[in-house]
Image (cartoon, rainbow, N blue to C red):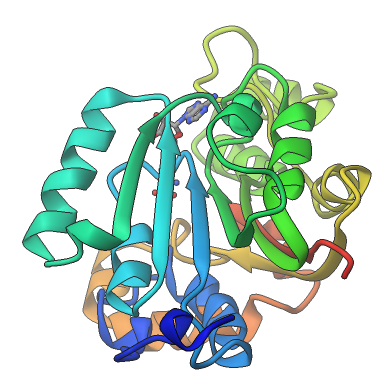
Amino acid sequence: MTRLDRVEQTRDPLTGPPLTPRTAVIWSVLRAELDRRAGTRLTVLDVGGGTGGFAVPLAQAGHQVTVVDASPDALAALTRRAAEAGVADRIRAVQGDGDALAGLVEPGSVDLVLCHAVLEVVDDPAPVVAALVAALRPGGAASVLVAGRAAAVLARATNGHLDVAAALAADPDGTAGPRDTLRRRFDVEGATALVRSAGAVVEEIHGVRVLADLLPAAVADGQPAALVELERALAGRSPYRDLAAALHVFARRPA
Ligand SMILES: C[S@@+](CC[C@H](N)C(=O)[O-])C[C@H]1O[C@@H](n2cnc3c(N)ncnc32)[C@H](O)[C@@H]1O
């Protein structure tokens, strides 16, 4: 990295967007990586980054972010949001498919790749994960968030849909059939194996929204800070982690 690559003004992303049960644990993990690389302007790729919930704070923290997303509408919203936040020059919005990254982003050029809530909707997650890892420089890190199967089974059952819960639990992909909005859900072992199969080393795995979706709105809305703290406390601990609505895998391409 040259001096020009140094971040001129570092802003803690945790002081940017409000932390929610959906984002707090992920930001804690990302924050540790940003701290590890403190003073360096990172090249970040957010695959399926949507409207920029992570991309914009990362750009505000001084990093250069490319968002690849299949949806032109999402990218238009991202572009507006980046402009409003004053970071349009640090965000590149690219319409494209997650498994065709090689044609959109130079392989081996990225310090940090994000792929949140995407692998459960693509045709085949394996080529997307392979493309994510190929985009990383040696030593670069991947933040992958996938839908959890166990939470979905429990949610269907507690809502009284025992047949759907049974189908979800039995289906090899963790779906409840053709009307399911997701094409697959993961358990810790499956998510870890998917990322490892692309050649990355899994360093951490956390549960995201262990409790948030289970609580009455009055509790979640009434005690937001306490809920975020509890989510953080439980995120890395089995069995709580394994029952979370989503699983966050943090992995690294070997140096
Ligand atoms: C559920 S949203 C998640 C957005 C964001 N990552 C987040 O966590 O808030 C899924 C995003 O993935 C995008 N997407 C779906 N399939 C994709 C694909 N094959 N390649 C790239 N983006 C895709 C969608 O357009 C959408 O913006």
